[in-house]
Length: 339
Image 1 (cartoon, rainbow, N blue to C red):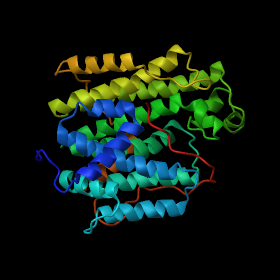
Image 2: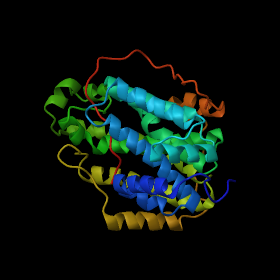
Image 3: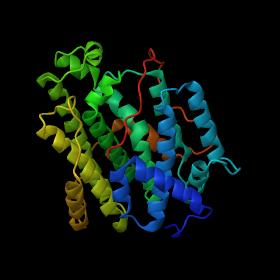
Image 4: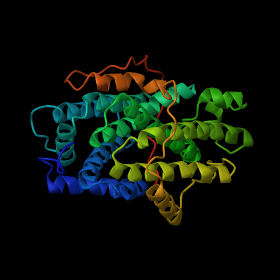
């Protein structure tokens, strides 16, 4: 286990990251307060960088040059020099202390490149592959912060990250569509009799669309269940925080279901008292609680990234994940985290 403090983590840099966490996601911030101090500080730093990078991509002015600058920042963080930016400087200290592989952040940047390209997502596998890059990567980094790096636990961390991203997708259907964005699997929409390109121009809720949202949430619930086995493998003092975050995110799906899966007319939220109840449930969960492991990988789209982490893919060389040729660009944005 690592020491109780992160060497070279400046107080002012940490405060900057903690402010980004507090303002960017009330749910994550509340759950993180249950973590031991070093884990809490390191998790805030990881979130702070991801939030900063996401905001750059989501600014409306992102281009390939934005991605080049982000890649330069990652190269500097993994280099020998000290970054000037306080968030980058804090991230460098956390990466060195917890030995987080560079492959994690290279995958995150690839997800950002898909955003800039306006990649289309035809199948559930396409959506999961995207979610691995923009969400599961955060879970992987937090696993390293918690000193858990065996493939089985990393696999379940990816499941939780993708489950949360799928919940975001289901929740933000209307909000995204009104901005010209669509993350539902196009093939599922056509199976329901909906033309994806036409629908995003004039979005409206129908029972057919609700059936697609329900399928997305069903997949999210499957992955929440798979992730539970990994949560049970975390250090005892960390389990409650991650279980609370999982409970709160999954509960958004319940709210959507109670509204008939209509996430076009409104945006589902979990109330403060409900979040408190879910946190209490996480606190009182039995220590032996765990989901039975599956005989096959629950998220095959994460296999290459987990393998790269196992290979210690943290060199200065960029990591390739077998990305296919770019599709026709279309303006899109990163999904915001739940509040």
